Image (cartoon, rainbow, N blue to C red; front, side, top):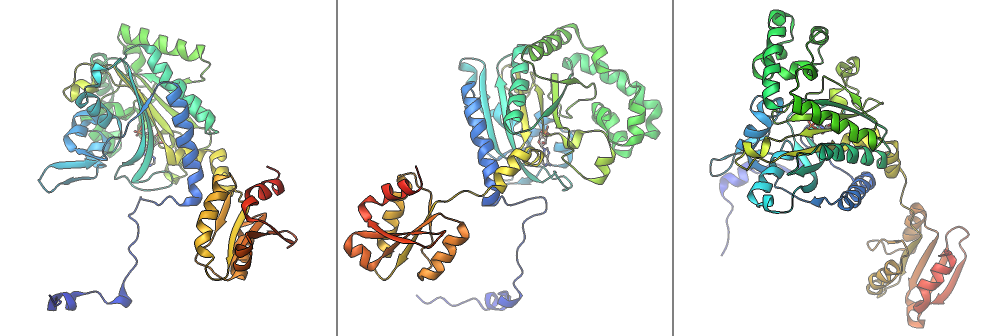
Length: 451
Ligand code: AMP
């Protein structure tokens, strides 16, 4: 059958010359191989420590029903009201790219009947999250989080464990963290406090920034961590949440702090940590580094460290019930991976330090190439770090590449040597070449590399 191009298709086909490069979306970025050492280190360190502590790795879908986030994160929070990537799918359902992990993990806990497992269920996950915020240094529209959760435990020991693990991981990442903790009390005591907050701010309403004027009705707790100077000046004398805590939350908070003291985790009390999401109760914490991570002018002027947090978390005892599960106490945290890397000289050094490669495998002459791949695998299997470039045939070109990589030896597999069962080892420093037995190449290299 002969296909004819539709006349319009030809007419509309873009001219080759004028094809523009399609760029990456604003606030999104590629992670290149040379950046991957830090990422791999974080993943491996996290996996090793968290599995020792009994946490299982979970992956949840990137897309969930929008209602999941509306019901948990909260309809009036910045994340849900302004920052979600929301669209209708082909069947007309409103779905969203996950703006955080906790609601998805909680949904999986309910749907997969994890309540029937031995409690608590400890989980961790890692991956991209999406928020349509104004991009700037340290703030992306797609970024990555490491998320750690303990589901099914009300004990203050679990709050302390999550904070302790956050501290431990920071140390492993080469970060000296500044952990700021607060208690938000029970939902009921918070409602009481919110009334007092509203009464406090109402007479000063006209002095508040536009956003806080809206927050006053919709999410008044967020007034406490507004970074506008006028709002901060007003907030200085605000009644403190801690003075309105219910007795049980007070006791819980004291115990969390005792556990932290016992585990020698340094922390600061900060009554302005509110976390901004609807589902938190009792413990709330954020993690900062001394060096500001975000150097946005507007924010560096401000001493409110909200934007510079590398991580944060807290207790969310009501969340699972909010989406139809049985009442389940839970606590968790999330690190922002891009900010963790930016804050850590240790992690950045991992990226800067090039991998050390010992050997380059070069080929010379026709019919040799097919023997190169099995030989490459033999060397790799023997624990020798090796590189090759199978798209270049000329020996000069291959030696130039070997030089660029900075290998110690190049092994040259030639036609003649192959017939003799031998191979050449070239010392890249002085150019001296030696012919050795091909069957013993691994030992010969290891001897020279002093392995
Ligand atoms: P949150 O869920 O808002 O508490 O965020 C947890 C962590 O994710 C923060 O402490 C930041 O490290 C990181 N984070 C949040 N928003 C962004 C963003 N837009 N870009 C990069 N990292 C972010």
